[in-house]
Amino acid sequence: MNNVIQAEGLRKSYSGEIALDGFSLSVPKGMIFGLLGPNGAGKTTAIEIMLGLRVSDSGNVSVLGENPGKNFHLIAPKVGAMLQEGGINPGLKPREALKLYSSFYPQSLDIDELLVQVDLKGVNTNVRRLSGGQAQSLSLALAVIGKPELVFLDEPTVGMDPRARRRTWELIKNLREHGTTVVLTTHLMDEAEMLCDEIAIVSKGKVIVQSDTKSLTKAIGEEIEVEFEKPIDLERLNSVIGYDFRQTQANCISIGAQSSTLLLKQIADFAHEEENMVIRYASLNKKLEDVFFEMTSENVDPEMDTE
Amino acid sequence: MKSILALAVSDLKITFRRGEALILNLLVPIAVLVALANTSTGITRAMPFVYLQAVLATSMVSLGITTGFDRRFRVLVRLGTTPLGRRGLIYSKIVSLIVLQAIQLLILSLVGVFLGWQPDPKWLLAIPLCWFASCAFAGIALLIAGNVKAEANLGLQNLLYLFMIGIGSIGFADNSRVPDSVHTIVTIFPSGALHSLLRYLGGIGNFSPVALISIILCSLALPLIAAKKFSFDE
Image (cartoon, rainbow over all chains, first blue to last red; front, side, top):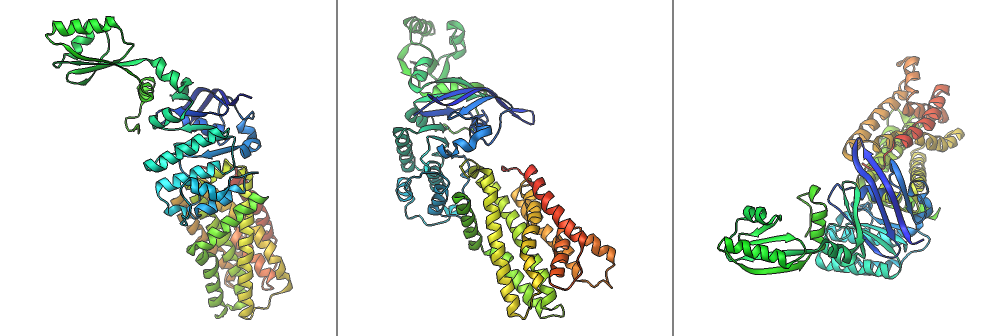
């Protein structure tokens, strides 16, 4: 079995509101797989279906070879989950929570070692008194305590300081090295770009693109940035050249396109006619964040954290 | 089984750490017992009522409120993703409830004996009866906790506790002051039914078939309705 998750045409709606609209996905074994998308795109619903917490209205899903809606109990010992809201009893202490969760699984990591890894060693306070970052670290530790083959991490580094975030990244990479497949949901593009071997972008309830991270940024092409000596008339430039340039500063424009000498010549001619001149022409490789915005531009939540 | 027991122990530990739970489950019933034992009510008539109060506190109010907040903090959803599963979660709640109630009723009985209570031998049946009635009260608690927001649940559970205690306490009144028809209506409610049967086991009342039927029906039907209507996610 090469794919640990195989979803085909999942549909799910809540009181007429469509959450998933033909969601299809395949997650290969042993990699860190990023699930990206704007708020409300359907990521959490998809994960909840994969965890057997919800049942899709139609479509098929297989997780570790089983239908989670019917047989989640068969795969539960091999699956870990870190949900967005921690889901940890606020009256427990970190060690107690880990001890409790370790009793649920046939095998478990060493609690002391795990406490050190998530920097909670010696923290003897109730969960309700932990800082946001500490609670996230504990939640992550609970997701991996049972040595899972597959772990779902829903925004694992939210609320963490840079040190904790780096430590968490190391832990996630370490999971992959030990053969665990990680499904990572994140709004942090640098995190996804750095950690994920493969990425799926979800928009309006379906996966609109799935690719390995490098190919994804490469396929979308380059970002061309042009700087003029003086401010330019963007509307006129767009109508003359027939491109859809964006104005980044008064005398700066950019566009997502392959660099070409023809395009450079057209821009230079336009500048000449306007008694202006190109003083800088740069072709930059796009980042995952640019790709994400282009792919989901129709329904991006303006408040979304993209750091 | 190991995981069910682990969660039950963890739940009990949290309950004993919560001051308000100790007050509600133990201190209030003991205070009521001591108070009633020293009035004209007397210890023999006080014990069935205090048992009723204790069972209501653990099986309904305490269970309902903690479940409501567990639901709010998505503790139940997260536990549902572990090998414990939803069934294991329910079994562990039952185990912790039975243990908590056993401790509670044992302490109340010891306090009663210390205050001069001499139980009728039939009283031994009171513990299984209370466990049985607990199913009915737990059913009510979970039906509310599994369908409303945590804050509303908190208020409703407390209101219902007062209502159930009020209904149950009508059993104190003499037949000469309260008509038989009212006593019969009272025993239709699970709290009235439990009080009536406890009074019978305590040797101070007649056996009420209506009360027994009511307890049996409520104990079977209410948990089933709660299980059907319960939503793990707020």
